[in-house]
Length: 98
Image (tube, rainbow, N blue to C red; front, top):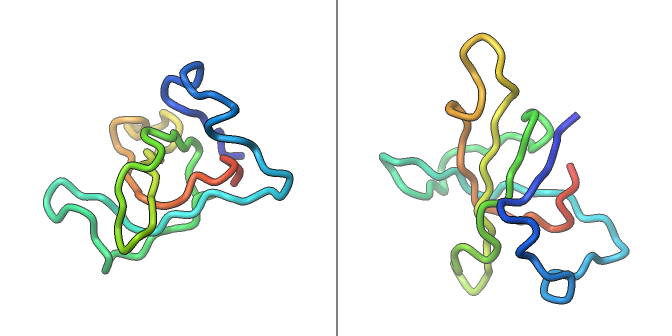
């Protein structure tokens, strides 16, 4: 089961980011790489393949008149994996559901 959390969650106002009645799942649109930047060509996995997803920044970038959120996805700490071996994605946090 994927845990979803928000960096500085106590800073987010419910008025600013209202929860809608319709549940909308997290969606990854583009992968972010140190070497290539935001890649349109890389395929993004489904968010549920990760153990943890953290919303880093809401409305991080505006591309083609759409606002995208920045998220960090990683697996739990096992066999050398963990937070240090995750991936950055831009997409839609929506309601923070997987």
